[in-house]
Length: 404
Figure 1 (cartoon, helix red, strand yellow):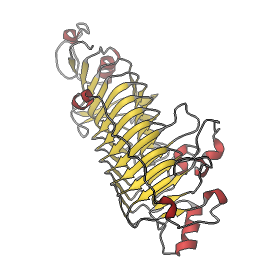
Figure 2 (cartoon, rainbow, N blue to C red):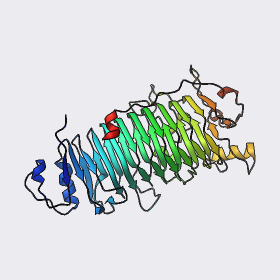
Figure 3 (cartoon, one colour):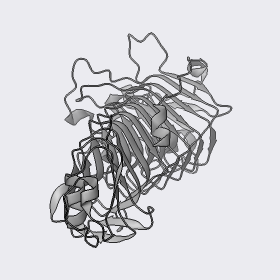
Figure 4 (cartoon, one colour):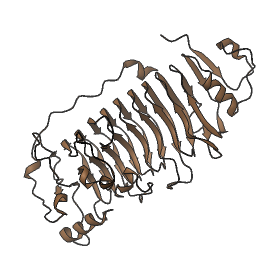
């Protein structure tokens, strides 16, 4: 149980002694004031950061659970790391029962906000951005909870990350909602995570809008993700990911991509004008990084139980961002034709007991690209996808997260 909340006002001439932090008078806000507040925080503390653009030169690290960091608004309180000289992140959190809200983190050398191994995490109305726009030298991740449990990301914005704007990795019980990802390589990525709801978001102008991946070299395999009621539009940004990174092979022009993951529902989304395809479903063998990563014997490389229904597709598919798919497009549909809304590499698990892909989406078609045979015999036969799968349950976060 946390101690009574203590609000540390970082721009008032009061004493920190009232919060049990000694008798040093508070100073006008600067980097050292914030660093001291974070490093000496006690459970229950609320660290208030005033409006303004505040220059940071080194990473901030929070190791205390039960702390809230709060600004005056994501447009008003900005932690600028343009002059960062030390540290891999902007803010690194190694703690649980953590809330961060109403501020922005800009121009970090590495990841903007990383939250490691915590539970009961809230990221609310936080903006991460590299202000020069898409650039391979930008930090990899904007909002980056990894190995967390019971995590809520809402009302946030992520711009110009060189890997993923909003990334949730190796976690359990996650909700990402009412957020915006723009001009990242991957807009929103759910990787090796068990149980995620991704809804009411906008993914626009990224290389790939929303990604649901399993990677082969991690201890936890992900499954059970619902992607719904999102606007996934014109994700055609040329890929600026670092060479060798997993996302460096994501074709520009991808709305939603599922790779090597199971039990994924994609429904009730507006998926529009993504130049390669509005949805791609693929196995590990079609990933550009597959030849460079060791595949453990326990790793399942095949997507299974992917259920696509009730989406609103339009446009897209007219300029595939991968050479093999572009060749396929022109060969099958002509120079001015378009790939179908759903492109599947067609690589199946020979021992599978459930369908790889079920589709109930009006006149939307699936192209089986026949990736296992070098795209030699692509097919538009839709009969294999006329199936149903059990609907996944909504993610049930602790009630306290919504009110914290």
